[in-house]
Image 1 (cartoon, protein in one colour):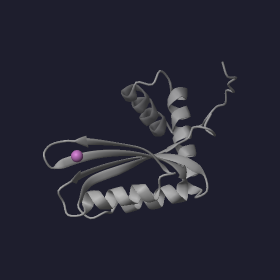
Image 2 (tube, rainbow, N blue to C red):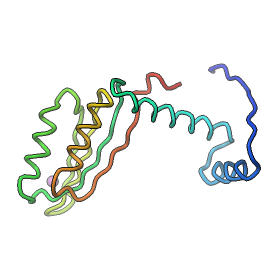
Image 3 (tube, helix red, strand yellow):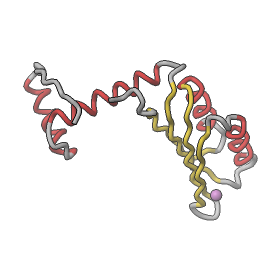
Image 4 (cartoon, protein in one colour):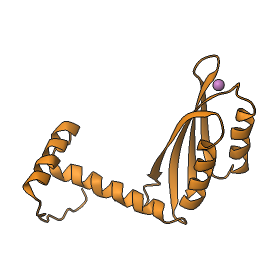
Length: 139
Ligand code: NI
């Protein structure tokens, strides 16, 4: 097991009780587990602030494939970035609606541009990005 260092934190009572409520509600076994995740989450956010840092994104798009030129447009953007788009899963939700899950890996600056252009494509009904990490620099 990895060596751990103990240190103490001073917190306002109210903030501590909010933390404890969160820990209980979220199913963490203790405060330390929750705080470790807070720190990791922040470290991942910091990775995304460096445009040259290699990161991972999971993008979700819901759209009507019969909308004019939409499928072609989404396809074109992905084909322009074959080295970055590492996986695409397409699910036909019904006669019209499609769900696409696109996984991208590359430099943060480039990933932001690609995900922005996919999300802002006309007639995309809904979408979102989970900005995550390669895990390489996150202990
Ligand atoms: Ni479809």
